[in-house]
Image 1: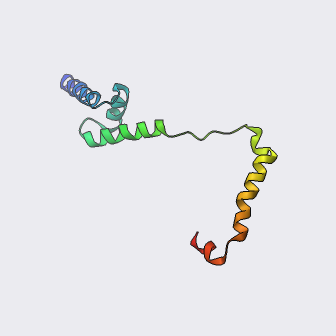
Image 2 (image 1 turned 30 degrees about the vertical axis):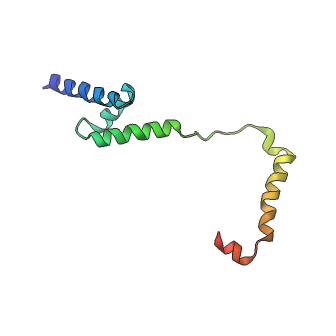
Image 3 (image 1 turned 180 degrees about the horizontal axis):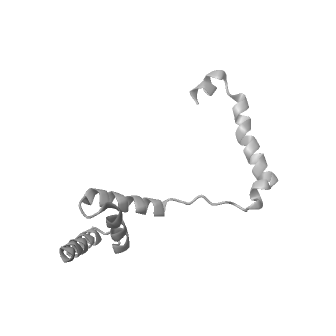
Length: 92
């Protein structure tokens, strides 16, 4: 029974690789979802890919934010709000 299970896993991995996914991601998704639901496996792989492509939040040690140019730009952005009418403020 385990040899047929291993064979079906290999077949499923080959199918996913044929779709353009990496063997590593295919194997990871099968581990999490089992071999029975191809849609769940593909959705997991797509989620992994989306997470890899999304920018990671980074802590900035850049001192530019403390510069007077940055502070002035922020102040200018907020100064526009002072000129809003009540109607314009309600829209937001």
